[in-house]
Image (cartoon, rainbow over all chains, first blue to last red; front, side, top):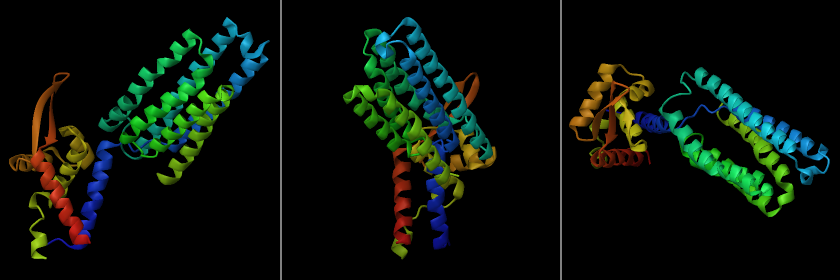
Length: 201
Length: 96
C-alpha cells in the first residue's frame, strides 16, 4: 500500500516528466547576458556610424548602408554563437544535449515565425521604410519568443510581450528606434539572463 | 476512504508507466529512444511497460523508418488520457 508521501512524490515526478519531455530547460542565463551585451555594443557602433556620417541618417549613402548591414550581420552571428556556447555548456553539465526532441521543437517553433516574419526587414529596406526597421525587429522577435515559450522556460513569454510593446512604442515614436532597440535586445536580455541564472541555477 | 481508492489505477502505480503517461499527455508523439533517454531505463524494461500500457489500450504505436533505421513512435489513446486524468484526480483528492 502506498503512503501519502509516495503520492506526493508521484505528483512531483509527473510534473517533472511533463516539463522535461516537452520543454528544453537548459537555456543558460549567460546566453541572455552575452547576447544582451553584444546588442548594446552593436547599438553604440550603429549610433557612431550614423552620426559620424556627414549628414547623419539623411546623408545615407551606399557605404553607410553597407556598414550598417555589416554590423547587423556580425551582431546576429556573434549572438547566435555565444547563445549556443553557453547553453551547450549548461546542457552538458546537466547531462543532456542541445540536440534532442525538446530542443528541436524549440528551435523550429522559434525559427519559423522569426525567419518568415523577419522577411519584413529586407522588404521594408527595399521599400524605404527605414524608420520601421528596428521597431519591427522587436515585434517579430517578440512574437517568436511567445511562440517558443511553450517549449522552454516559461519566462520567455513575458520577455516576448515586453519586446513587442517596445516595438509598438518605436513605431509610434520613430525617432527613438535605436534607443528602444538597445533597450529590447540589450537591456532586457541582460535582465532576463540574470533572472534565469537566479531561478534555474 | 475505500471509495477513494477505487479511483486509483494500478496501471499507473509503477514509476515508469507513470512517467510514460505523463510524457504522452503533453506530447502528441514520443519515440522509444527518447523515452529511454528521459526515463533512464533499459530497452527490455521500457518495452515491457510499453507493452503493458498497449494491452490496456492506453497507448498506441506506429513504426516508421528514419534514414533507414526503424523508429517506433508512441501516442496516448483517448481512453488512456481519460484514465490518466482520473488517476491524477484521485491523487489530488487523497492529498486534500
